[in-house]
Amino acid sequence: MIELLAQTGLNALYAASYTALVAVGLVLIFGVMGVINFAHGELFMLGAYAIVAVYADWNLPYLVAVAVGMTFVGIVGLGMERAFFRPLRDNPLGGLVASIGFLMILQALVSMGFGVRMEHVPPVTQDVIVITEKVRLPVFRLAVILAAVVLLASLWAFLKKTRFGWALRASAQDPEAAALQGISINQTARIAMFIGAALAGVAGALTAPLISVNPHMGHSVIVTAFIVIIVGGIGSLEGAVIVAVAYAFVHTFVTTFFDGVIADIVGLLLLLAVLIVKPTGLFGSADRA
Amino acid sequence: MLLELRAVAVAYGKVSAVRDISLEVPDGRIVTIIGSNGAGKTTTLRAISGLTRVREGEIHFAGERIDNLAPDRIVARGIAHVPEGRRIFPDLTVEENLRTGAFLRREREAVQRDLEAVYDRFPLLLERRTQLAKTMSGGEQQMLAIGRALMTRPKLLLMDEPSMGLAPKIVEEIARIIGEINAQGVPVILVEQNAELALELADYAYVLETGSLALEGPADELHDNEHVRAAYLGI
Image 1 (cartoon, rainbow over the protein chains, first blue to last red):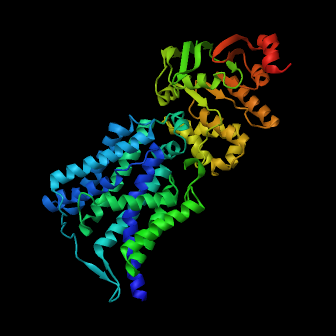
Image 2 (cartoon, chains in turn red, purple):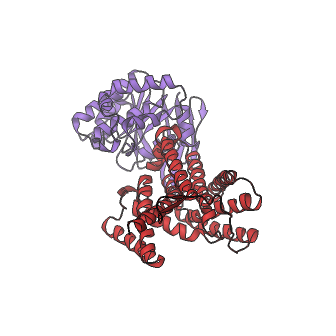
């Protein structure tokens, strides 16, 4: 029993790592730009397809493919900012609708380019760390977890220690007051969009060898990310990370001991319960809700 | 003339907020705009700092036209705006708030000197430097907002209702600080509902009524003006 719990805990940690990357990017974009990016799951999907193209089809090294995926998706994010989030800045609902349209375009483009079949990405490494007979941690999963920790720590350092990090936080708290300090709204929006999209892209790139890659794979990720950011309190980056970990544990344990559908239901019930007890989310403040 | 507004009009949608505003700020002076709630004082300041679009007219600052530049470009030219309600960044520390004011400045040593000068002026902020700004009282937040504006190295300081919601003793303190800043060579546009305070501090005053200028003149003359006394000084 203890071994099953330990194994499930390791699985949960892996699920938490990529969920946190996606959710934090979504929160960053919402915080700075005030817009909900519905296409965020498709950015995750694009990151996974970057692996299909660069690693599986062109046979380039996996790490190169991850770097290409992260950068490419970040640039797609910049394009989204310029093409519709900026012109629709005074119209958050318009931005949301535009991102839903863009989500469909991305799915269609990927379907045209790669087909709708699931893509198989060859494993990067088959090595497994055997902790006990029944508790095993594949080295690749460990690498994904470590990569997520490093990326989140770098983001944290960027936000706390650098000039542009301050600017981003100031913009998220009061865009107008930030503009009065000389912080350009266009610039902070570009930075937030690049980082947010790149994090979704890298999450997709990191998980691609372990999951089935298809044009609609963004859907389940975005639902999870929404639950996480609403429970965490929209606008709170720390909340998003903490709740991503907590949610992944609950979801993975319920999936293991019952099944996946029940786990989804439990997740949504938790969301409802939090909204009833604390509508601003666990770590949110009233002025952002 | 340091700042000049020529027949400026601003509208929110189809609703006109201010029209035909012409005013001048000479270097080194304190100019005040007084008027009742909704007269267009805040709108005028927002037009100067680029937060609100100017629909008609021109704004010139230090010889260059600045109307409808982006707010960050206007800050770069030397206009700092302490907004109504202070608008400090609640979840940044006091020092982080002050440093955002220096966002556009690259000279590290000069920024450090200015930071120390702000702490000298407001010793309270030094005590609280690692505290989150939202945990401070209204008066302290106003000092932080002024300190943050000073960190931009302004050539002109816009202040919107600095006395709002503060205890009389703190208002006196803020008034003293505004006088001090001006005495060190920074011209100020002061927007106030507290006309008594504003006319006492300012050299020159404009009176705004329902979106247009009703009266202007040297502050001490307006202080003795019958209409101003009846409408704004409650005498």
